[in-house]
Length: 241
Image (cartoon, rainbow, N blue to C red; front, side, top):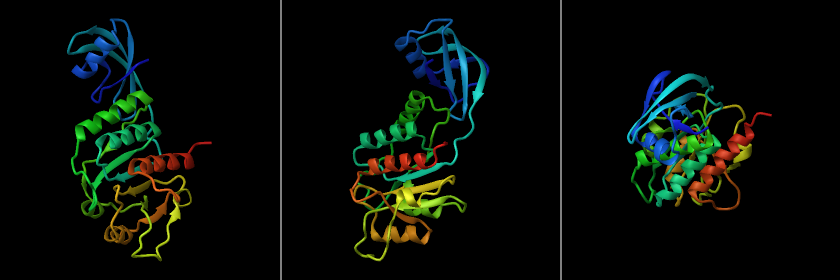
């Protein structure tokens, strides 16, 4: 059954908005009596019957929802958007499919592109949520500078990790393999830098806030590859037997 995003859906009569209605009518050629699913992105998935389909809206009759609990533990990634936005959007799509909970775009000293395309990024996540049949839409936080993000970091029990390349200025700093450092059954926040990596000063700032330095191995990964590697590692370690 095809799934649509309806953040304000409720039981009873419901009007599907222009974009989703256009897809329902013109692409899927749905007719009255057909059934679809509506996901609000917050754990509720509703079965709905098509009543009528127009060019800019569709009327549906919505039934009882099936509710899914918040996936735990949660993984949050701080990621510096790549110079080519299609690479960052690829990461958003795949990370959503793999089960990421929250994404915080950050601007760093070496960020090559500081253009936030929040609406486009949000659409990418919504499409990935529908395609992968997830009930929860990952949180996309507003982009912010690294110093601002570190200052706003809340106190709590979340494990903090920092992925970076070797720092010649601090050869005594040791990095633990990600799969050994990640805790099992505990929320985690992992920061991944831009294509030029974090500066030594930024790494020191992370260390002052208690971030544990980690490595993904001997190969140098692109930002979006490293970010997706982290999502997969986290969920493999926390997979339910």
